[in-house]
Amino acid sequence: MARVICLANSPKEQNRCIAGIDCRTGRWVRPVLGVRRRGIPKKVRLVDREEPKLLDVLEIPLADAGPDMGCQPENRLLGGGSWKRLEQMSPQDVFEYCEDDLVILHNHDPSVPADYFEQIPKARWKSLQLVHNTRVEFHGIVGKERIKWHASFRNSAGHVMNLRVTDPIFCQKLEWRLEVSPNCLMTISLTTPWRPPDGSEPARCYKVVAGVIEL
Image 1 (tube, helix red, strand yellow):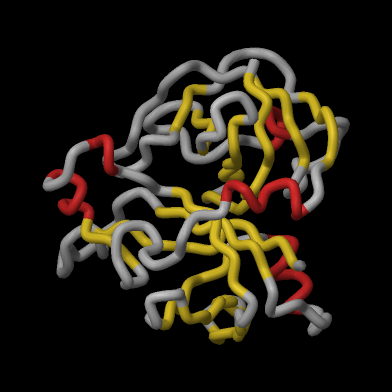
Image 2 (cartoon, rainbow, N blue to C red; image 1 turned 30 degrees about the horizontal axis):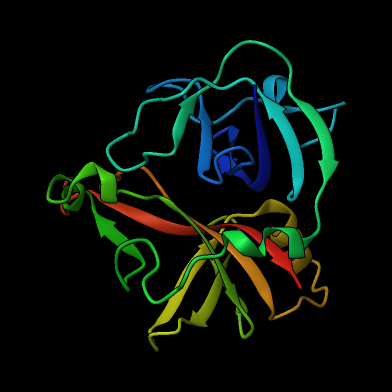
């Protein structure tokens, strides 16, 4: 069993992508069910019939490794058994896991070319990063079916990042026009490689804000 501080719970197709910090190692983990199964289904992830919340400490049966999907070294195969909620941490408890945001997930762009990971050692791969920023601006872009929310902020190198927000609880606050803080901890996650169906562009891994903790 692994004790994991939940720092992301965001939609992935019909399921959810859960990620957090392993309390024992201090490293990121992302439970997965295998190469072809996208996200964690509700019947597996619910704890006492509730969604895992950000900052929950969860007990999760995890293997020591999992399929990296070409860019995600944090993936660990999920074993059998129920998830348990052990406690709830405060935002201050996870500040130690924040990383310098001079570079967020390999470059200053909103995505990373999939073939980039073929050019660097696996020891340098990463697809999750916790960053702190005090001047985040959130805005909506009207899509075909619904508003897509984005977070804009300037990292400490001076580069402006504009990333899709996929945290469903935080997006709901934005949709309801509730006041949100510009001072946030954000879990930035890198998606698995994607290319347009027509093959007009090479595959890329996109950065999303998968978890937002207001301060």
